[in-house]
Amino acid sequence: MIALLRYQTALLIGSHRWLPPVILYAAWLALGIRSGDPILDGFGYAAGGLLPAAVWLTRVCVTNEPPTARNCAAAAAGPGRVHLACVLTAAGTALLLALVGTAVVVLLSESRSNDHQVAVPVLPAALAGLLAALACLLMGTAVGALSNWPVLRSTGWSIPAGLLAALLLLVLGASPANAAVSGLVTGSAHGTISTPWLPLAATALIAAAAVAAACALSSRRG
Image 1 (cartoon, rainbow, N blue to C red):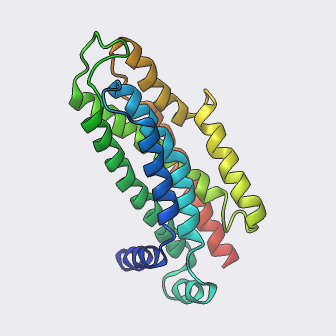
Image 2 (cartoon, one colour):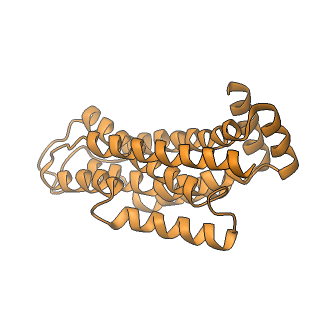
């Protein structure tokens, strides 16, 4: 698996297809994170942008390899393991974005509530923000795994499905990603930190099930 991860990482870097989702997330941070804004609001905003970025990165990684090369890798290591390496490469790239987003919020935001009256401790807030980012990252990975090959083969279906799912999971109250983000934003009004352990656990289970299903289906469809 380590060799597969190295191969997929080198393939991703060499293809330069990582640039659009990374630029999108950088623009998201540049537009929404301003110096002096409340820190918990900043963490919520930064986490929310990771969901569509993770969807996009997952699509890039699972469709990046030429069919002939993928068939050779699948023959050597198994199609399920190859697909898992693709998804893990996308998740690792999104994790780097999560760390960068967390650092940007810490550096630029003010560690106070919305009304700037209540002090917010930076380290617990940063932990909550990073966990919310991980929840959105995992949810985006799950969406990416289910909205691309081998689950959906047609680009005409996979791209709209991924975009629509990312939007709905950000705004629907039943979504764990929405719960993680809204917990930070709501806490910012009073300067209280809500660490999203439950949303993170829920998204981890959803992502694991989605990726396992996609890997199993890749083995059947070759």
